[in-house]
Every structure is written in C-alpha cells, then in structure tokens.
View (cartoon, rainbow, N blue to C red):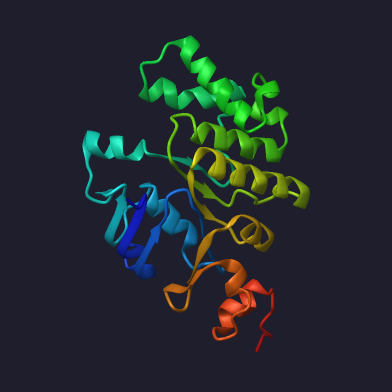
Length: 250
C-alpha cells in the first residue's frame, strides 16, 4: 500500500487557489521532495498533507484512509502515523531537548516516565544529540535544533515524516550533515520522507523523486528523478530551476 496518495487536490485559502487538480503518490521508504519557485504553494501543500489546513477539494489518503474525511478519534489515530518538523524547528524554549522529545509521548501514550526517558534518549541518539539531552534549544546551534526537531517528530515511531525546509538557514557543511541524517533514517529505519525545500544541493543529494509546482500553471509541471529533470530542456522553467539559470527582467 502507498503511504500517501493524493487525488484531485486543490490547495488554497478562501477564493485564492494556489494549486489545483494535484495527483501524485509517495512510495514506501521514499524521500519525496516538493519544490518550486516562491509563491507556488509548496508549503501550503505540505500543510494540507499533514492535516494542519484542509484542502479546498480532493482527497489525501494516508495508508489508504482519507485524512480529509476523518474526524474525532479516527482522525487523531490517523495523524499518529506521521511526524512533522516545522521550518524553524518549533522547539519549546522552556524545555530541554529530552523533554521536547518526550512531549508527544506524554500526550498520546500511557508509558511510564522511565519508558519515555529511554525512548527519548534512543531517539536523540539516532540524530546524534544524546550528549546534549539536558541543554535548552537556545544553547545549541541551528543545525542541532533541526536535528532535535526531527527527533521529536520521530518520538511516536511514525513511518512518515514531513519536513518543511529542513536546510533553511544552515551553512553548507551543516546542511550536508542533515542531508546525510535524512538518508540514513530513510534507509535504516524505512521511514518515508516528504520534504519541502528549494535547496538544489539538498535536492540532488537526498531526493528519490520530486514534484515541481509552478505558480503560473497552478499545478505540477514536472515529476521524477531530479538528476534526470536537470538534463531535460523541453520545459524551460524546469530546466532553468535545476540549472540555476536566471530569466532576464523585462
């Protein structure tokens, strides 16, 4: 079964449509990237996919169940299948890293304190942050904050992780380390990643497959392996994006 299937999805707010008639699937264990220029609606699409905002129309199947129709306890149970890392990490500044990771377990499980501590420490260890478990978010670097946010998203052992601009604001070396972490988690733990990013270096390093949204087309203008899309000259916008070619101002 496909972990995510999107059918005839229209994304927007009120009367404003950002993207329409979106159809795509995400394969198990895949690193799937949503990309495109500014204002094309990629972050809004991601927020639809993990249920923060409702789409204007269409369906989002998570492991075969329609998230757009689920309500109450059924919706909550469905959303426990995935974790989310927001663009700025969104860690709670008043909690240390261990407590940030434990937060979801405290909310949604009946585990004992010792059990939660053990799982949280194991999760922090997976992202290379176990030695820093007692530090506050303000005491660690931006790259470490992103890693801690991924650890928190993994706290309930979901098989799908949604990441919004994970490399934003990071230097190239730190960004490359985060890319490798995503690859390792995907391959070793069979986690499916859906990632929004415009960082070409990261896209080429991690993406198994991408979809490219376009503001003017209000939809998907390309789908596939980014290394192949980079060589395709049939679609000017796609070719210019992947090859960083600037269109002259008129």
